[in-house]
Image (cartoon, rainbow, N blue to C red; front, side):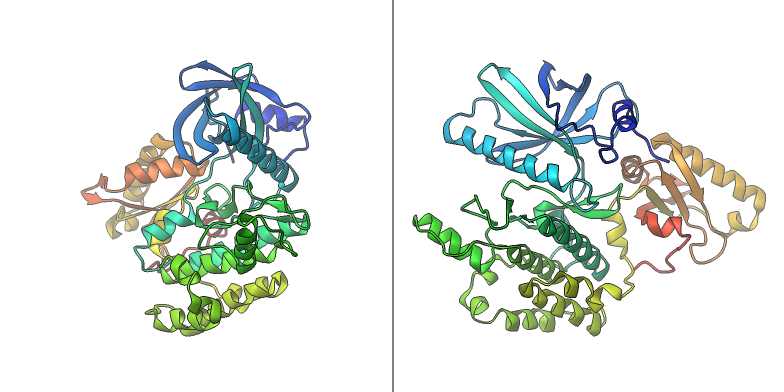
Length: 436
C-alpha cells in the first residue's frame, strides 16, 4: 500500500515515466510566485516548508503539494536566487543545465535521486530562476558520520552504503557519466526505498568530454583530479582527462571515514598518503579498536584498496558483501523506514492473557494511527521479537513522525522506546533476535 498525490497518480496513468514522476521533458512549465511561502506548478499550489541547505549557486527547500492529503513531500532545488547577476548567474544557469541533462538520462535507477519536474520561476521578465523538483531524501552520510561521535559506523551500515553507491556508480558509468563530486553530503538515505542514493550532479560530465575544469571536493579528490585542477588554475591544458576511476577513489575515502569515524582530509593530502596510501589504510584498520570480527574488517580493507583498480565486478563480488551483518540499534534510530519498532510496551502478563493481549494491541494501534494510516501491526508472542510491537505505516514520513513523538511516551507506566525496522526484513517475517 502506498499514498500518492492526485497529480502524480493522474500523470502516471498516461505516461511511461518512472513511478512518482511528474516530469515531462517535452513540456517545461512555468513556475511563479502566488503568495508568500507558496508557488504554483503543474496547476498545483506548492508550499515551501523549510530550507534544507544552500550553496554558491543554488538553495534547496522542502515543499509539499497543497490540497492533496497524503502527497509525498519533495525537494525543490532553486538555481540563481533573486538578485544574482554576472558570473554567478552564468554559473547557476550552467549548473542547472548540466544537472538537468544528467538526471534526465540517469532516471530510473533506485540508487539515484528521482527528478520529478523542471520549472522556471519568473521574478521579473529578465530574471528567471531555474528549479528542479526532486524526491525528498533523508539523512546524509555526512550526518551519520557526525552522529557516530568519532566511533565509526556499523559494518551493516558500511556494507549497505558501499553496495548501494557501487551499483549507482556502475550504472552511471555505463551510461558514460562521471559524477565528479562524490562525498558524504551527496549520499542520502531514502526511507521509502530503504537504500542510499546519489544526489548533486552539477559537476558531472560525460567521460571523454570533460567540460568542468575544477572537479571533486577537497578531501575526496583523486590524485589525477588534483593534478588537473592545478593545471587548470595555472591556465595549462592537461594531456589526459579524468575518468570514472575518480569516483571509485572518492568512495574508498568515504568508506574509510565511515569505518574509522575520522575525517581524513588532512591525511589524504599528506606526503605519507601520496607515498604509500596502502600502508596508511593498513595502519587505520590495525589501530582501530575493532569491535567486529577481524576477517570482515579485513575484507572491507581489501575492498577499499581495490577501488584504485576501477573494477566494479571485482568490487561488487567482494567477500565483504556476502557477510550477513546485523544492524545496531543506532542504525535503526538514524535510518527511517516505513516500519516502527516499539520496545518496553508489553510485558509477559499481557502476552499470556488473550483478552488483555487483544485489548492492549487495539490500544497501541489506536495510538499509532494518530500519526498516519497503519498498514499492518505485529506483536509476536514468541521469540524472536516476543513482546515487541512492529507498526507498518504507509510511508516513511508517517513512521518518522510517529517515532519522534512516541519515543519517551508513557504506556502503562513504562517509557516507550521507538526505533525503525528494515521493511524488507519485516515483509519476510524476519525478526532480529538481538540488536546491539
